[in-house]
Amino acid sequence: MGHTPLPVKRWGDLGYCGMEGWKLPNKKPKGKKLSKKKKRQNVVHSRERIGVEHGIREMKIFRRIGELVKIKANSYLYTLMLASANLANFKILARQGLG
Image (cartoon, rainbow, N blue to C red; front, side, top):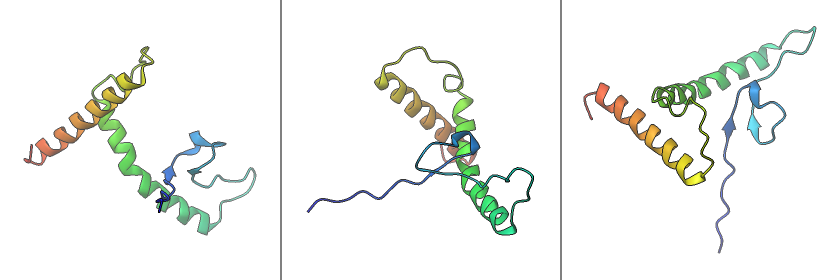
């Protein structure tokens, strides 16, 4: 029997507005206020995303991720992301005395 994969939750900011499949924060309607419920949802959303944003920042420290990459080979880009993620994780472990 085949296994149906669970849908991946993709949490984004308002830069992903208009793209399908992304969990986005609530926007304030023009000329109106955001309800308290929607404000609470935005707080939960930002708490979920902060870990991701910090991870991206750690990876960008290694410069190649934050710069323009002209090589379009998927294998190179995948290797670049993997290497940056591993270096960022190693840096965190070293700070904790585990690396």
